[in-house]
Length: 155
Image (cartoon, rainbow, N blue to C red; front, side, top):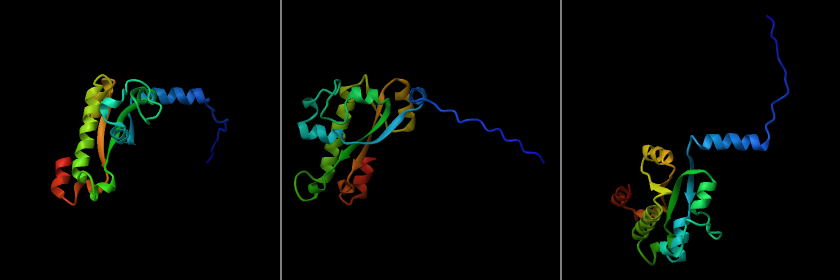
């Protein structure tokens, strides 16, 4: 048995070539960021009316220009619930609902750029329409207050 091996130098791509490949891929497959704390930052700043996300916001982790520059196809917005809500302030479940409401209003405020999504089909449809899908994840298991009924209500 004869085995022939061809040894050729490895193909080295430039940084520009890798970037071009990545850009091409991101035009066909949505990039999904699994965690973003923007909702809590907006709440801390005074609410949704306190910020214009259509323009760059240097002090915030995200805004629409940043999402676009990163070729974001979908974003999981964290409905963060501080553990301190267990002992004081609004109940954890109420706090979570307020965070979810803020995220939904955020997406509704910028309908040209953002759209809510609950399913993979929603993400695909929004991606084809050129919109960033808004997905929501509750950060803090205490938000359900030991209630399976509360968990089902968040679904």
